[in-house]
Figure 1 (cartoon, rainbow, N blue to C red):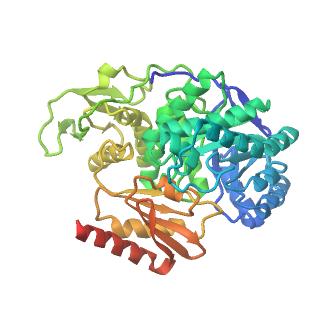
Figure 2: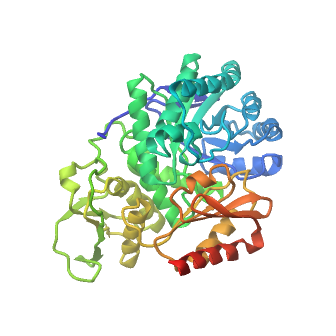
Figure 3: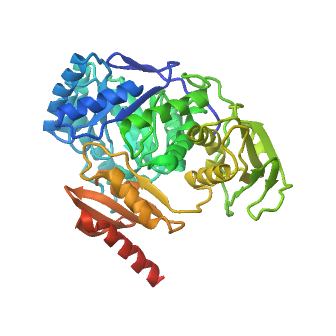
Length: 510
């Protein structure tokens, strides 16, 4: 993959224009019950006042879709004209209602016309595959007609965790499968002469997210498509970890000139996502705008061999390795405000040593991850040594270096927590659940534990996770081992104990 400046067309969601050389747009999503008009309006306003330029709300059924009328009306009465987007899974009828009300509709190619993925391989002949695409086209035609008549924008939003059985049978649960899934839907929309579209490729894995977006750009370019791209890491988590993994993935693509709109998905109040997204865009672009002339990107490493980057610590100007021994190896030092890409020969096999000048710890975490993530996603440097001339010093820099390696999965040194940002589908207090699960399992190392608000994306986004804690219904939780729900509908009060018992039982058998 070489760097590119992928110039997209400009589309409109209400009064908001997205794409071209316009600034990267920032958005978030409510986690209120969409049937609760007052709460939803209040949260929309908090997102908007924080700087959100578009607000998404879940519409899992016809009633929720219809209530978007009331939410939109109350926002307009309060003086806010920010466009709204309805988030749709499994329910074309809800999409068709919402498309008459809000400025944008997000649909998921993995479940718009398909049932929930079974993760079972289904062999399809070429004619069977073509028949499936024709069935999908027929299901999409009413939505396309409504969107054309009402001027509604569409986001074709592919999630790594919810690809259809049809796609997974042919391509696997892969970056390629994600990109092809989007292209198939884009062909249908374009065939009907409808182009007011944004596309997204989202995953909780930074490498999959980056590679699927790069592949999407390549496939769109080959077919003469130029639709705007929405960026985000799903299930990024909360706190410092959520900010670092989001910055690493989003920053990598923005620095390549890919990305027109951004959402940082944190398991926190949605208005807290906005400042993080703004900082990623500001740091990579140098302004509130976008990168327009990127240099060649670092390529993803190929071939075998174990990748094990080290962490070097700057102790008052003396660099030491993880054993505390003075490090005299090959160090590549550069100012952190040098945002252009380096050639592969400059970073391969070397310890990267960016020098920051930052007093704010959170801002340093976001900026460092946005700058450095691309190199470690590509598996090129030999290690990382973060230096800072500002107030953040010592152990905080060492911890940050390990966190960036963890976020890019270049080196796993502790348990990785995957948790969704919650939405109106969530049926328990996810923020509290994340804190409880992390508190009870923080002594574990090298595991992936997923805490998910619902089963829409849960089983798929947990691919690669060792265990999962997934909201199933009001006050009920499914406990997963890998992709298998081994305990179903456990009362929430008992769920954490049952999860720990499962982990302890599995470890005892090893």
